[in-house]
Image (cartoon, rainbow, N blue to C red; front, side, top):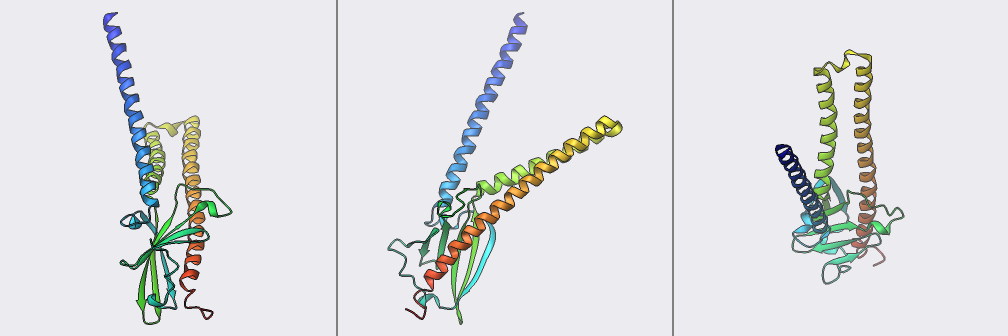
Length: 224
Protein backbone atom coordinates (compact mmCIF):
# COMPACT_ATOMS: atom_id res chain seq x y z
CA UNK A 1 0.00 0.00 0.00
CA UNK A 2 2.85 2.34 0.84
CA UNK A 3 4.44 1.86 -2.58
CA UNK A 4 1.10 2.36 -4.27
CA UNK A 5 0.50 5.57 -2.32
CA UNK A 6 3.94 6.86 -3.29
CA UNK A 7 3.24 6.14 -6.94
CA UNK A 8 -0.13 7.89 -6.69
CA UNK A 9 1.40 10.90 -4.95
CA UNK A 10 4.16 11.09 -7.55
CA UNK A 11 1.59 11.05 -10.34
CA UNK A 12 -0.39 13.81 -8.63
CA UNK A 13 2.74 15.92 -8.23
CA UNK A 14 3.65 15.41 -11.88
CA UNK A 15 0.15 16.41 -12.99
CA UNK A 16 0.22 19.48 -10.77
CA UNK A 17 3.64 20.45 -12.11
CA UNK A 18 2.44 20.00 -15.70
CA UNK A 19 -0.69 22.03 -14.95
CA UNK A 20 1.33 24.87 -13.44
CA UNK A 21 3.80 24.77 -16.33
CA UNK A 22 0.96 24.85 -18.84
CA UNK A 23 -0.66 27.75 -17.00
CA UNK A 24 2.55 29.77 -16.94
CA UNK A 25 3.18 28.91 -20.58
CA UNK A 26 -0.31 30.09 -21.58
CA UNK A 27 0.06 33.32 -19.59
CA UNK A 28 3.46 33.89 -21.19
CA UNK A 29 2.14 33.38 -24.73
CA UNK A 30 -0.82 35.69 -24.10
CA UNK A 31 1.50 38.34 -22.65
CA UNK A 32 3.79 38.12 -25.67
CA UNK A 33 0.86 38.43 -28.07
CA UNK A 34 -0.49 41.50 -26.21
CA UNK A 35 2.96 43.10 -26.14
CA UNK A 36 3.41 42.36 -29.83
CA UNK A 37 0.09 44.01 -30.73
CA UNK A 38 0.77 47.05 -28.55
CA UNK A 39 4.19 47.56 -30.13
CA UNK A 40 2.73 46.98 -33.60
CA UNK A 41 0.13 49.70 -33.06
CA UNK A 42 2.78 52.27 -32.21
CA UNK A 43 3.58 54.70 -35.02
CA UNK A 44 6.79 56.24 -33.68
CA UNK A 45 10.25 54.93 -34.71
CA UNK A 46 11.47 52.23 -34.57
CA UNK A 47 8.05 50.56 -34.23
CA UNK A 48 6.97 52.09 -37.55
CA UNK A 49 8.86 49.36 -39.41
CA UNK A 50 7.74 46.58 -37.07
CA UNK A 51 5.59 43.76 -38.39
CA UNK A 52 5.56 40.92 -40.89
CA UNK A 53 5.41 42.17 -44.48
CA UNK A 54 2.58 40.53 -46.42
CA UNK A 55 2.17 42.72 -49.51
CA UNK A 56 3.48 45.82 -51.25
CA UNK A 57 1.87 49.16 -52.04
CA UNK A 58 3.02 50.99 -55.18
CA UNK A 59 1.67 54.31 -56.46
CA UNK A 60 2.74 57.53 -58.17
CA UNK A 61 1.82 61.06 -57.18
CA UNK A 62 1.90 63.81 -59.84
CA UNK A 63 3.50 66.29 -57.42
CA UNK A 64 7.03 66.31 -56.07
CA UNK A 65 7.57 65.69 -52.34
CA UNK A 66 8.27 69.39 -51.77
CA UNK A 67 4.93 70.31 -53.36
CA UNK A 68 2.90 67.86 -51.28
CA UNK A 69 0.68 69.23 -48.55
CA UNK A 70 2.66 68.17 -45.48
CA UNK A 71 1.30 71.05 -43.40
CA UNK A 72 -1.77 68.94 -42.65
CA UNK A 73 0.35 66.99 -40.19
CA UNK A 74 0.54 68.48 -36.71
CA UNK A 75 3.71 69.31 -34.78
CA UNK A 76 4.07 65.66 -33.77
CA UNK A 77 3.79 64.51 -37.39
CA UNK A 78 0.27 63.10 -36.90
CA UNK A 79 -2.61 63.40 -39.36
CA UNK A 80 -6.10 62.18 -38.47
CA UNK A 81 -7.99 60.77 -41.45
CA UNK A 82 -11.59 59.77 -41.85
CA UNK A 83 -10.85 56.08 -41.33
CA UNK A 84 -7.40 56.03 -39.77
CA UNK A 85 -4.30 57.91 -38.78
CA UNK A 86 -0.96 58.67 -40.42
CA UNK A 87 2.40 59.69 -38.97
CA UNK A 88 5.06 61.51 -40.94
CA UNK A 89 8.79 61.05 -40.37
CA UNK A 90 10.38 63.88 -42.39
CA UNK A 91 13.95 62.79 -41.66
CA UNK A 92 13.27 59.32 -43.06
CA UNK A 93 10.90 60.44 -45.86
CA UNK A 94 8.20 57.94 -44.98
CA UNK A 95 4.68 57.81 -43.58
CA UNK A 96 3.16 55.14 -41.35
CA UNK A 97 -0.53 54.52 -42.07
CA UNK A 98 -2.92 52.64 -39.80
CA UNK A 99 -6.71 52.25 -40.21
CA UNK A 100 -9.15 52.52 -37.31
CA UNK A 101 -11.43 49.49 -37.53
CA UNK A 102 -14.20 51.18 -35.51
CA UNK A 103 -14.51 53.89 -38.21
CA UNK A 104 -15.81 51.46 -40.84
CA UNK A 105 -19.32 50.14 -41.39
CA UNK A 106 -18.07 46.61 -40.63
CA UNK A 107 -16.52 47.04 -37.19
CA UNK A 108 -15.26 43.49 -36.85
CA UNK A 109 -11.66 43.40 -35.64
CA UNK A 110 -9.82 40.46 -37.10
CA UNK A 111 -6.71 38.73 -35.76
CA UNK A 112 -4.69 40.19 -38.65
CA UNK A 113 -4.73 44.01 -38.33
CA UNK A 114 -2.78 45.76 -41.04
CA UNK A 115 -0.69 48.91 -41.33
CA UNK A 116 1.59 50.28 -44.04
CA UNK A 117 5.03 51.89 -44.05
CA UNK A 118 5.06 54.23 -47.07
CA UNK A 119 8.23 55.71 -48.57
CA UNK A 120 8.17 58.88 -50.69
CA UNK A 121 10.84 59.01 -53.40
CA UNK A 122 11.15 62.05 -55.71
CA UNK A 123 11.23 61.42 -59.46
CA UNK A 124 11.34 63.60 -62.55
CA UNK A 125 7.57 63.36 -63.02
CA UNK A 126 6.45 63.54 -59.41
CA UNK A 127 6.73 61.25 -56.40
CA UNK A 128 7.13 57.50 -56.41
CA UNK A 129 5.23 55.91 -53.55
CA UNK A 130 6.29 52.47 -52.36
CA UNK A 131 5.20 50.83 -49.17
CA UNK A 132 5.00 47.57 -47.27
CA UNK A 133 1.78 46.26 -45.76
CA UNK A 134 2.43 44.62 -42.40
CA UNK A 135 0.62 42.50 -39.82
CA UNK A 136 1.74 41.66 -36.24
CA UNK A 137 4.40 38.98 -35.99
CA UNK A 138 2.33 37.06 -33.45
CA UNK A 139 -0.59 36.87 -35.90
CA UNK A 140 1.66 35.61 -38.69
CA UNK A 141 3.51 33.05 -36.55
CA UNK A 142 0.41 31.70 -34.78
CA UNK A 143 -1.42 31.39 -38.11
CA UNK A 144 1.52 29.56 -39.65
CA UNK A 145 1.84 27.29 -36.62
CA UNK A 146 -1.87 26.46 -36.71
CA UNK A 147 -1.83 25.65 -40.44
CA UNK A 148 1.27 23.47 -40.06
CA UNK A 149 -0.23 21.67 -37.06
CA UNK A 150 -3.44 20.82 -38.90
CA UNK A 151 -1.65 19.80 -42.11
CA UNK A 152 1.06 17.73 -40.39
CA UNK A 153 -1.48 16.18 -38.02
CA UNK A 154 -3.69 15.07 -40.89
CA UNK A 155 -0.75 13.67 -42.88
CA UNK A 156 0.65 11.98 -39.77
CA UNK A 157 -2.65 10.27 -39.09
CA UNK A 158 -2.85 8.97 -42.68
CA UNK A 159 0.73 7.66 -42.57
CA UNK A 160 0.27 6.02 -39.16
CA UNK A 161 -3.03 4.52 -40.28
CA UNK A 162 -1.36 3.06 -43.38
CA UNK A 163 1.55 1.65 -41.36
CA UNK A 164 -0.86 -0.15 -39.02
CA UNK A 165 -2.94 -1.44 -41.94
CA UNK A 166 -5.93 0.57 -40.86
CA UNK A 167 -7.36 0.52 -44.38
CA UNK A 168 -7.48 -3.28 -44.48
CA UNK A 169 -11.14 -3.37 -43.43
CA UNK A 170 -14.26 -1.49 -44.47
CA UNK A 171 -14.59 0.10 -41.03
CA UNK A 172 -10.96 1.22 -41.14
CA UNK A 173 -11.42 2.69 -44.60
CA UNK A 174 -14.47 4.68 -43.46
CA UNK A 175 -12.67 5.86 -40.33
CA UNK A 176 -9.57 6.89 -42.27
CA UNK A 177 -11.57 8.74 -44.91
CA UNK A 178 -13.68 10.46 -42.24
CA UNK A 179 -10.74 11.68 -40.16
CA UNK A 180 -8.81 12.77 -43.26
CA UNK A 181 -11.83 14.62 -44.64
CA UNK A 182 -12.34 16.32 -41.28
CA UNK A 183 -8.73 17.50 -41.24
CA UNK A 184 -9.01 18.83 -44.79
CA UNK A 185 -12.27 20.61 -43.97
CA UNK A 186 -10.70 22.29 -40.93
CA UNK A 187 -7.69 23.32 -43.03
CA UNK A 188 -9.88 24.66 -45.85
CA UNK A 189 -12.11 26.53 -43.40
CA UNK A 190 -9.07 28.15 -41.82
CA UNK A 191 -7.73 29.23 -45.21
CA UNK A 192 -11.10 30.75 -46.13
CA UNK A 193 -11.22 32.70 -42.84
CA UNK A 194 -7.68 33.99 -43.40
CA UNK A 195 -8.49 35.02 -46.98
CA UNK A 196 -11.67 36.87 -45.94
CA UNK A 197 -9.87 38.61 -43.07
CA UNK A 198 -7.02 39.68 -45.36
CA UNK A 199 -9.48 41.04 -47.90
CA UNK A 200 -11.31 43.02 -45.22
CA UNK A 201 -8.14 44.48 -43.68
CA UNK A 202 -6.68 45.26 -47.11
CA UNK A 203 -9.87 47.12 -48.10
CA UNK A 204 -9.65 49.17 -44.91
CA UNK A 205 -6.01 50.04 -45.54
CA UNK A 206 -6.70 50.89 -49.19
CA UNK A 207 -9.52 53.25 -48.23
CA UNK A 208 -7.36 54.92 -45.60
CA UNK A 209 -4.53 55.31 -48.12
CA UNK A 210 -6.96 56.95 -50.57
CA UNK A 211 -7.78 59.54 -47.89
CA UNK A 212 -4.07 60.11 -47.23
CA UNK A 213 -3.40 60.50 -50.95
CA UNK A 214 -6.14 63.09 -51.26
CA UNK A 215 -4.77 65.01 -48.27
CA UNK A 216 -1.23 65.02 -49.70
CA UNK A 217 -2.37 66.33 -53.08
CA UNK A 218 -4.62 69.02 -51.65
CA UNK A 219 -1.93 71.72 -51.85
CA UNK A 220 -1.10 70.99 -55.49
CA UNK A 221 -4.73 70.87 -56.68
CA UNK A 222 -5.93 73.61 -59.06
CA UNK A 223 -8.21 75.04 -56.38
CA UNK A 224 -5.32 75.78 -53.99
